[in-house]
Length: 328
Image 1 (cartoon, rainbow, N blue to C red):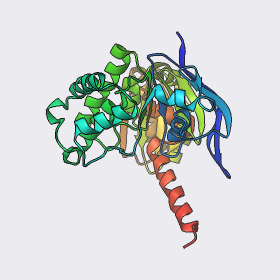
Image 2: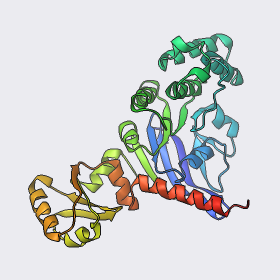
Image 3: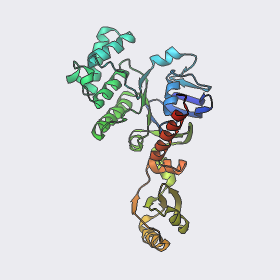
Image 4: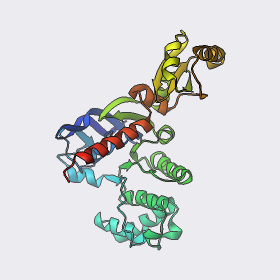
């Protein structure tokens, strides 16, 4: 297969801050590729460079065979973009928003009208096509933005946190649309998200990005298989005592974090009773014990030492510190 996107040592710096740090990967045609990580990890900056909205500090990339710096117009004509921040005109109807977008791309009227009708039907908005967008729910607006991004038949679609803030039902609806676009229409999709379930369900491969660096890249299954076995999470105010008390050879991993201990077991049915005995013998207070198969959240924890929620909290604290230092 031909690569739709190639990224070679791409870097973006802002003075002392390195937002994207020497990343490399390729994405095949028709693939749904996920960039997974917390806010501030470098996901949106990567998309901004690939869509020619930001110039890289170093490195190179091509989209549909076109260099992102030497052929900006060519790249822009071949991509669709749905970023986090809404860019719809709320005073126009859905049809008018689509029509305006089509005119910008100089799509002939007959073709434009046919595509608008087809895409509004795809995202189930044909019955609301003449309603002003400000009357739409958040989920309806996201669906309209995806439809608009597809109007000029892009070969690559960038989706930046497409389901952020949506309710579970609407999120599942959008997941269905995204899967259809890749499978039935052959559109290459690069998706940024910090929803682990979203990446696990949709993506052919995912790259976990943290502090601007890609720290793991593979299929969701392979990433979870690297952890292996089952995962036992023990919540306790005495997490350090528990971690120091467990030295069994059948433990595949042992990680302490945020008032809990994550334990990897190769065969939970065989070893769980012994594990519980060891926990009781440790004398530590135990709040809860849960067992599950490895998830991408476990993968993220394994590679970064923190859950993605803790990373989000760290990012918010960093932003607060930056604001405190800003001149008044």
